[in-house]
Length: 148
Image (cartoon, rainbow, N blue to C red):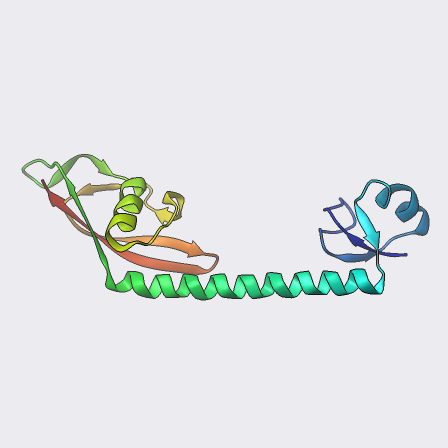
């Protein structure tokens, strides 16, 4: 019997997949628990529609991510921090600081977890920071740290 899974089922497949299972397994386990629905023509059409909308959504998100990455090449984020005589900061500039400055200065809102800064920025000057915007899309952002 062919069924469309409504949730991930261990050993059978992922949500939204159409799988072949035995009649008894479908009637006695999957269908009563709401883990699957019968693969009728209308259900198959709904499944295909959901897959197409998901693919379209991913395509739009990828295009937006590429646009943000291109925009990031041209902009600079300027931060001010206290520093000693040799240009070393008291503390460091974290990804949270960079994310807030990017939002306030250029109106690009990104989560602080997307910035690749293992130790933060600890010196004055310009630093290039990698930003993982979307799967497979990495932007480069120039961060300028100036002394107060």
